[in-house]
Length: 510
Image (cartoon, rainbow, N blue to C red):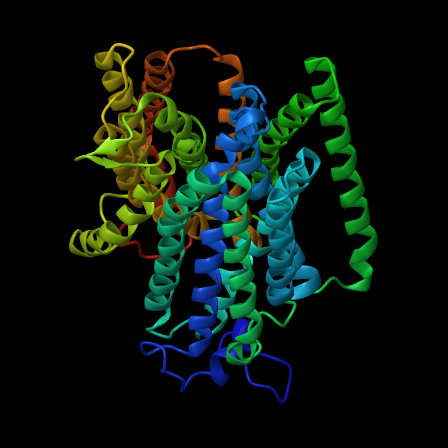
C-alpha cells in the first residue's frame, strides 16, 4: 500500500474500506455519489455560464444589466480566469487546512448562494452572485476528482474506468444545462434561468451530503496539514501575495484611469500572466529540483504556452462565440428553432461521443504521436475552427451564417480538446519535478486562467472589429504558434528523453 493509501493506525483507508463494493457498475457506490454531485454541479455552472454574457449585455428593459458588450464579454472571460486562479487556492486549502470533502461542501454552499443571489433582480446581487460562484467553484472544482482517486488504490485496474464514468457525469451535466436553461430563459427571463442553475447546485449538495456514508472517509483527511513551525513562513507568504495583489490592482487602476470594473479585469489578467512565470522560475531555480527535472521543466514551457493559447480560443464558447450565436447565426435548422445557448451543448455532446474513439486511437497507435505533436495538433485544430468561422463570416457578407457553421466550429474545437486537454494533464503530472508533483494540478489550471485573461484583454482592444477580422486574426496567430510547436517537437522530445535517460528511466514513448 502506498503512503497515500494509509490512514491513522486502527483505521482503514477509503480504498480499503470499499474494496469489496462493486454495486455501481462494478465500482464502489461512493463513485455514484461523486459522479452525481459533479453532474449537477456542472449542470449549474454551465447553465449559469451559458446565459451570463447575454444577461450582462442585454438591455435593462429586457431584464439584463445593460452594460457595454465589450465590457460584458471581458467580465465573463475574467470570471473564468478567477475560477481557475481560485482553484489553486481551493486545492491548497484542501491539502493543507480543511480536506477535500469540507472544501467541496463549503464550495457547493457558496456556489448555491451565488446562484440564488443571481436569481434576485437587483444589480448588486448579480455582481455578488458572480463573485460567490467563482469563489465556490474554486473550492469545489479541484477536490471532487481527488476524492474519486481516494476510492481506489493506485494499482486498482478500475481506476481509469472510474474517472471515465466520472467525466461522463461532467459532460452529461454540461450537455443538458445550456439547453434547459436557454429554454427557461427564453420563456421566463434571465433570473428564472439562474434559478434553474441554483436548483442544479442544490441537487448536487443533496447527493453529496446524503452520500457521505458511501465515501468511507474519502476527503476527510488533510493530506499535508500545516505544522506549527510552518505558520510564520506561510503567514509571510500570504502577506507577500496580498501585497502583490494590491500593488497590481493599484497599477491597473492607474493605467485604466479609475478603480472600477476595468481595473479589476486588468489586475486579474496581470496576475494570471504573472503566476505561471513565477511558478516556472521557482521550479527551475529550486534546490530540490535535479538537473534532469530542469530539462523537463524547459520541455514543458512550450507545451504550457500552447495550452494557454488553446484555452484562449476554446473558452470563448461562453463569450465571443455566444454573442456570435445570438447576433450572427441563423437560429434554426431543418425548420426547428434553436436558442443561442444550444450551441454550448455541442462540445459536451462531442466529448461523450468522441472520447472513447480517441481512447481507442491512442491505444492502437501506442500513444503516438509524441506529446508535443499532440499539443500542436490540438492548438492547430482550435486555430482552424476560428479560421473556418472567419471564412464563413466573410462569405456571409454581413448576413447571418447557418447554424451548422457554428456547430462545426464547436466540433473542431472538441477534436482539439481531445488531442490536448487529457494529454496535457498527464504531461503535467509526468514533467513536473517530484518536489512539485503535488502542485501539478495548480500549474495546469494556470493555463486556462492565463488563456482567458488574454481574451479579456483582446476583446477590449478589438472593440468594434468585425467577426471576420477578429476570428481570422486570432486563428492566424494560433496557427503560427501551432506550427512553431511542431517545429520545436524534436527539441521537446529530446529534452524529455535525455532527462529520462539521466535518471535511468526506460521510455517507450512520449
